[in-house]
Length: 75
Image 1 (cartoon, rainbow, N blue to C red):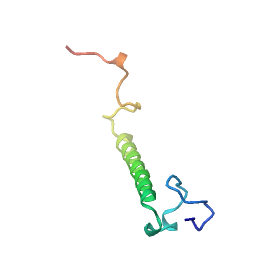
Image 2: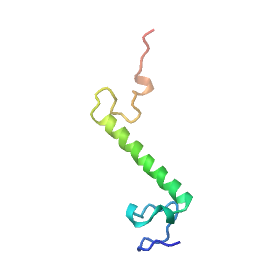
Image 3: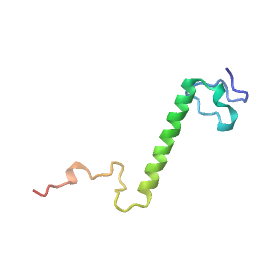
Image 4: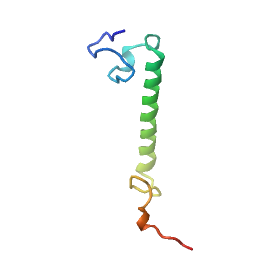
């Protein structure tokens, strides 16, 4: 099936379709699954950024930990 707007064919990997442009009844299960994965990924990224933004206890580095050569042991 085709999207009624000029976005081109609607596929499982096409994220050009807005929420109000198509109903769930018109989507295939694969399209719904792909859209849910995309939304959950966005939610996870947003949650991670929000948690780390103003928390002084979490490192601002990408990995959240110091590099291996900078750590030391308290044995």
